[in-house]
Length: 112
Length: 113
Image 1 (cartoon, each protein chain N blue to C red):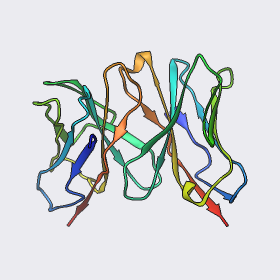
Image 2: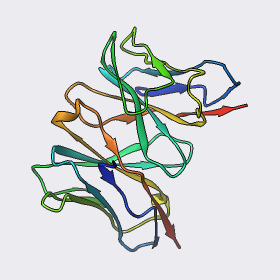
Image 3: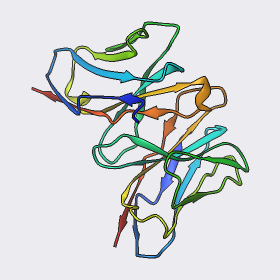
Image 4: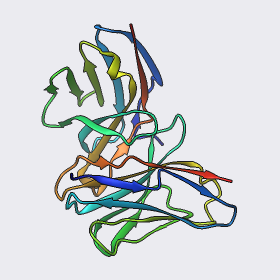
């Protein structure tokens, strides 16, 4: 089955801790994205990558970091610098030349 | 500055009737528009899209209308069904956006029996 997987479904972060959210796709998509959704708000772009070993900041990149060492994988690290990390995080991907993004099931991050 | 706006946070429609969800945008460089449907605690799923060279696109019960002069698009669902109850996001992208998609804040649609 082709698709996008995100793990874990729920993640708890302690104060001062870095946590990493996983995003894997087997769709052979070139571009991958990370979004954050807060209650009552739309999706806001954190980072995106159009090709392996390259990525760009989105609208709210502060306090986050990413890597794109493999085409299939685009992990997001929420660092201790992110002061309000509680949110629903969504990963998406799209094929080269296409506009439609396909989303994973999301990870809910909570702060202890 | 919200480039994609969904001014109605919620909408309630009777089952079997037409649901109309509205979306306005400000950036005239947008040339591709999408609608996504989202259930709680799940990722959005793509519903329907429209290119700026068209003014209407239909897929089953779903039709998207684009009015470029008014910078407005709408999603029509007819007939509305209970499973349509979800949050609907309007999104837009353009040549200058480097493949980024800008999302609206969403409209929660509730279908009542």
